[in-house]
Length: 405
Image (cartoon, rainbow, N blue to C red; front, side, top):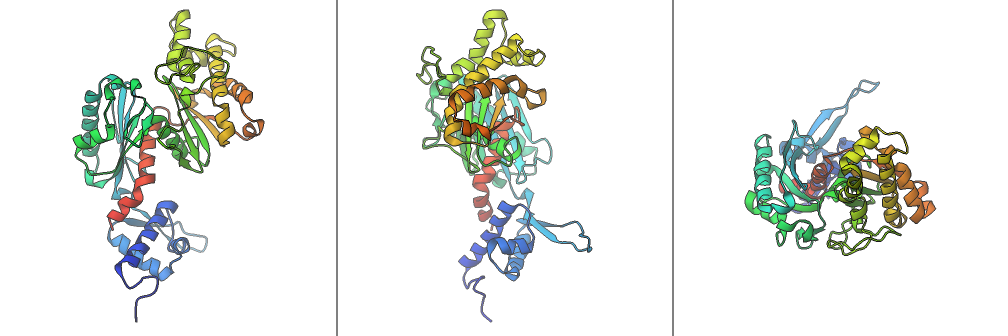
């Protein structure tokens, strides 16, 4: 008897069916044969044959579900987590963090290598060499090799020109002028794997969407508020990068009603980052008693409402809200998440929520604010690095699995 129409008579239809089942498992994570048949439109007999082949090739694994009231068990299939891994290299202004995770975003251990005390903006070559050593260390301490990597994501605290693979506003990273960071790392690592170059706030938004305060929401604005101010935008569950990769650069929006000298980096008066970023707040507070942005937040946590540090943060949050209010009206997100220097576990929501609401109300459509939820990020200090893992798995996993068929 000839081959079924589903199986096809050639290698290409059979390969396509294998891919369909793999992709269904990427989307559904854990599915039974019946569910796979429903998702792919293939017959259960065809799915059974494909599952058997994928099991033989070590690409998927199965487990038995818990017994039902009738005593029956069901076999559940998923992509084998140790088939591959994702690597994230995140450059901060004074640190480098490397994270390695398997396909379930689990390290099977710590999976994190960190280096602090390095001036990344002014020491490009030293930073690259350190990142290479750290990437190899993370692999050496894992069961994976370079050929097992789904991809590598390189994150930077600066606007990214994706079309040219470089930092867009290079005055913010003086030693990196003319460099293409991902390509520089590729040439040093000698790994033939996909490499992404991304902005750290964009990565923070992806991490919060996948594992943090944005989980369960399809439309989100994320603000990384610390030494600088950056943003990430999620629409219909996907990161919005824009034509050149500059979407979400809310730190350079002007604050309505505020006039300041134009900054070299953006040539704008009233630039949000220059006013409420760590440098701006630190300068205004230092004129009083030497406070920095980080200890403004720390002192505010112990103050009663109306305390001097709480007042500084309230006013800064109000200006942040005024600047991004039109963004909220334009995108109508379900949730606005503030990350960076603020900590959910420390109750920092109470330090900025009222000021943020006041600012948003001044420049946003009331209807856009009615259902908007404000929250603090759940992944402080790790969001950009973990976002790199999530992005690699989202964008490169399918092609990686095809290469293993």
